[in-house]
Image (cartoon, rainbow, N blue to C red; front, side, top):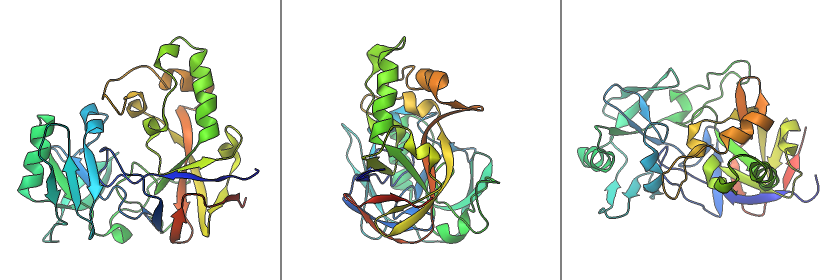
Length: 275
C-alpha cells in the first residue's frame, strides 16, 4: 500500500452538527472519545439529523472538558450544555433500534428548537459501554457497541477515493457540483497514500498502535448531497455513486470500522493493512 498515513481526524460531539478536527484522539471501544455522544430527537422520540434538518450543517458543537458541549451558530449567542445528571433515561430510536439516553437541560432544548424552528430535545448517551450493541448481523460481532453514530463506531475514507469520485463527477451530468470536499461524507478518520478504492479489500488495519476490524462498506444517504457550508442540497455524489459505486442496494463510499484495541491515534500515524 506504500506509505499510507492518517491524514485527518474528525470528531462530531453532537450527531449531525459540524464537528472538530483534533490532531489526535482517543479510540474507545464504541468510537472516538466524544464522538456522537449527543443527539437531537423530535417529539416522537425519533433522531433528528441533516436528513430532516439540513440546517444542522451550519451549527457547530465544541467538545468541552468533562464531556459537555458548546453549541454555536452564526447570528446566535452560543450556549454551554453540561453533561446531565443520570436521573433517568429517555428512549430514542436510531434506524429502528431503541436506545436510552439522558435529557439535557431546558436551555439546550430551547436553543436547538429556536435554531431549527421545530420542537426538539437534546440528549446525552451516558454509558456507551452498555447502551447500544451494534445491531447489524452478520457484520457485527457479539459484544460490540456503538455510541450514537448511524451504525458503527468509526467511518474511514481515503483521499484517493475522493479524488477518483470527483473525477467521475466531473464527467457526469452534474459536473458543476464538483469537486466535493471530504466533509460531505462526515468521516472520523481520513487516510492518505493509498490507491483509489483500496479500502474495499481491507479486512483489518492498524492506525498507529490501534487495531481495527473493517466491518462493512458504508452505504450513503441524502446527507452527502448537503453542502456543509451552505446547507443547500444537490444531486451529487449520489448520482455518480449510483452509476459507479452500487453494491446491491447501497451506494458506497467509505468503510465502517470497529476498534479491536484502544489507544490514541494521531495525524501522521502509519496506516497498515493487517488482512
